[in-house]
Amino acid sequence: MDFSLPPELTELQSTVRRLAQDRVKPRARAIDQSGEYPQDLFEVFRDADLLGLCIPEAYGGSGAGILGLTIAIEEVAKYSNAAALMLLLTRLPTGPVLIAGSEDQKQRYLPGIASGSARAGFGLSEPQAGSDVAGMRTRAVPDPDAPGGWVLTGTKCWMSGVSEADWYTVFAKTGDPASRAHDAISAFIVERSWPGVSVGRTDRKMGVRGVDTGELLLESVRVPAANVIGEVGGFRLAMLGLNAMRPVVAARGIGLAESALMYATEYVQQRPAFGKTIADFQGIQWELAKCAVDVEAARLLTYRSAWLADQGKFTREWVPFLSMAKYYATELAVRASGLAVQMLGAAGYMEDHPVEQWYRDAKQLTIVEGTSQVQLGLIARGLLDHDLWWD
Image (cartoon, rainbow, N blue to C red):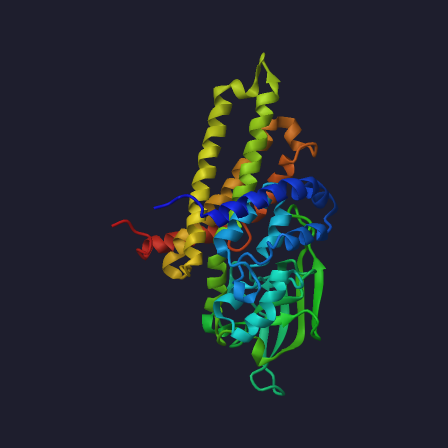
């Protein structure tokens, strides 16, 4: 068993760490305050060949896999979760295409993501169907004028990168709209330029500002048969795609937790109190130590889950291990950022320090791509089914 990263991933980690310190860190506060999309950072990532980390070389990527993307996102998330989200969006919408897409679909849509000439979004959630995916109302009916084609109508919401995307992976009901059966839902590639596709309202968010989250409106959008991902009735594809993303979201939490802990540690070493520094008090030291243990535990869980995902182990029996990483790392981000605010006291509550931004950003991570409660349910189900067992 080797816990060290291979040389190519060690070099990637070092490269992205320097880039994050030099280019992302100076921009983080301005992005949060303005809410404007950081096109300059997108171009930095493009020029550094970071947009194709999880895309195979055959389609223009570098083939670093989920682990490579996880490592890069961890470094970027130390300073900006909005910038880290930009990297995440190279995998979330492309996941179903990578898993079940046709060769034609991969050739048409993946190289643009890797090169930065195109961006994509992921359309699963709806106003009345967040965690309850089977409750979606977006409908796909057969196109009478195009054999094998479909006509999509509905609204997707809370979609990250909706305003910047050139195409979307969209899930819709191809069966009875009232049915909750998994084979009633299918996946489609929908291009932004097609008639009937538009962006609705964008959301005003508590944190992770800079990458728009909002609505995708579909009004009788005609989708050709060539843009159906996998088989009709492929709801399982949505779950497989999300399962494989657990370590990527977890990486955003680890990076945030690391930055919060490091910032708080340096602050308490410098802040005088009662004739000492805050760091001299044992109670403070213990809290820092516990958080450091949590960071290392979260990283081990996350790197293991990324390693599993790269082996294709994101089916049902592996879900508990993937969910553990997402749950633990994102909840840690909330705890660590809260600890940092508390250790800075009144100063931590002010915009003079970045910890208040990290505190706001952290909460999103426990909600997106499967809430903490959903993850706990999946872990429990794995235990009850003996997929997670120790003898």
